[in-house]
Image 1 (cartoon, helix red, strand yellow):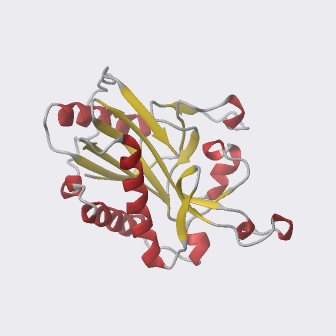
Image 2: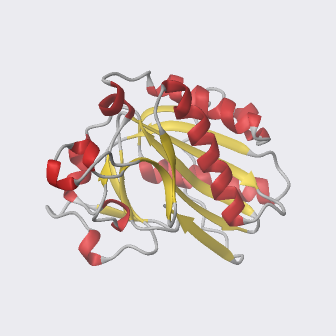
Length: 239
């Protein structure tokens, strides 16, 4: 489902929970593609020292990881998928691979960094020299929750957002690296929609059939009342 731009986080979260229950009951997997209205979300490992320095409100969520920002100029993708016997860590690695396969054709030298989930560009020299390229830079985040064998939450790729929004927090709890975007690294960027299409195609190539549902959502898709978070045993993994 394509949910469009400026999507309210709480409404999208409620939709994820509803779809989770449907998939857990044997329904088809789904993929949500969207841009959120500006919001800070804090995962289950967030520390007080990570929180916004200006007192901005924060939505505390049930995914793994720490605090991050979502908003205009950033692709967010929520695959609501029954992962079967794949395993949570392998599922996260598959999401990372889809991000790599999305960004590498743009000429970006993206990679994984040992000990840190998500997708990165490596620093090019001593921090003493200054400049945004001197440190490792995170361009995409991964944070999921798997309950009852079904994954919620997902990934975010910085296409052309206002990176100043990250300066009010400690993004993902990481103090010794930076945050970047496609636009910063290349001088320009495709549209968020184009990156969404490329990510969906990358997931499909990796065998995630949920992308077949990545079509415009009905106008009523976000109007449903929130559904309680399902109770089965869960695991959170994040970047």
